[in-house]
Length: 192
Length: 431
Image (tube, rainbow over all chains, first blue to last red; front, top):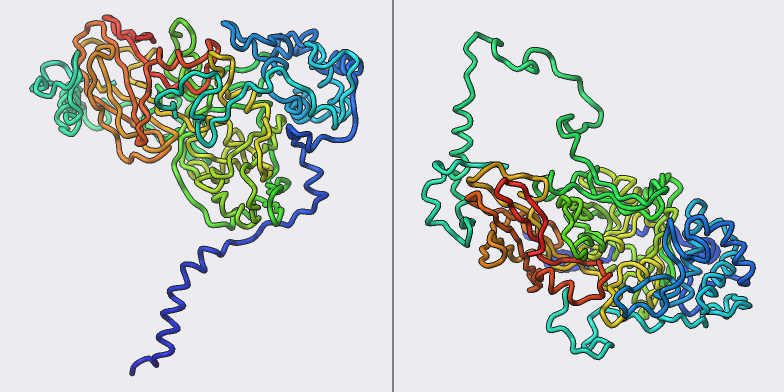
């Protein structure tokens, strides 16, 4: 007994569609998130200031926070020892002895705020208030004169701080630039 | 190291492949080459002739120890340990390196996988951990470990190499350290998990999105900007390593795994993926893992680890025991794909020959290379040079150094050289 023709055709169509349908199907077990849930954990601060919280800090308030929470690792005025040096080295990058610090090397002031807020002090990360993070950020920036000694920074002014090395990075993603910005000819073959 | 006395290595002269005793890799296929030595050694052991048990070793004369719920290495292997470089006063901050020269094959035991922690290893209760995917997506979603375990899984072998691996090669003088101390921020595992593209597909990525900011749930909230293109390609949320749940040091309960990319981007203890249109300039992609050039400018977002190889046998601390036939062996890899070839020199780079590559040769996976070498007992310099399937060739150290500012030490992939002294000791040299 032969299968009726329409049934056979349907089976063929169903078979052809199967791989397509199964590829599109995924378990969909994610729990939908509310904006409030995201806001609670989203601590990322962007170079344009997006993500900066309310609050503000002055250099003098920052000096107090620094003395209490930072100096035992980073030395007086960010001079380093036993841990990383935070200040100095501005203008040394092209020299024989480049000194890479947040002040000399990091391209954006928001990076300093973001990193302190998420990771410092190392013995009690995420323990500083937003005002304290603003304050210690502006204090570190003031030591090398990147901001004046009477500066007060907040969500509006922090992204406007001009870091000395703001033009110092060349992105190699997705492809290396055809001519490096130092004006030299591009290498014949990128290293990767 | 296996060794065959000169008299047993007959007819090797016709297999001479390059200067100073390197033998063609085809000789490895002739089992007689090394088995002759093993047979000779076996013949030297006296047979038991005092009846049953008379000459048996002590472990044959009593019952062995009972079962153990989770096995550990032999006590005779207790020197095979990770090598620490820890920030003073911060027991959980720094690195531990894989002792590459004490291992064989290509898979790193989970307990010897290198570590880089920025503020210790968190002890995460998986019932209280979720992965958030949000930002430029149509449906922000949270995934628990339990939910991810119900997803289709993929299993792949991949190496992870820290961007700072082999940084000591930028020192003016060659450091007399073991291959693991120099290059052990490199490990290779079988990883099982969920393709990240599946989860991003469920969240619905907006058309203007280009980057994803990944964040860990450690006490550094370690954060990196990852190209969306990579996240939709071969990126995975790894849940298992070498068949068991990933270890706390490797990101339990879940880690990002970006095959071939510098290790720092494979964010451990992954808790958040923020889909966005631009990188964020996180601390670890500005202060770290950027390449300072002589001009004072720095390259950023290099990502893929370059073609590289290192000889492990012999190497510093692995001494040669007199002239004879040895197997030179080591590891080669590339973050861009498969290893295409590894060349070996025994005369400081004057002549080279191809090493045999152990199958399988997989993309972004360590490949073991081997080559017979008849050492005549004279001072010699061994080098290896990898080429990947994209044509990237491991450069001489001096060429690599010349590209950069003097302090730059990330992403070193220059050729490494071991000098063998007449007494069999091995030194790190810049040849």
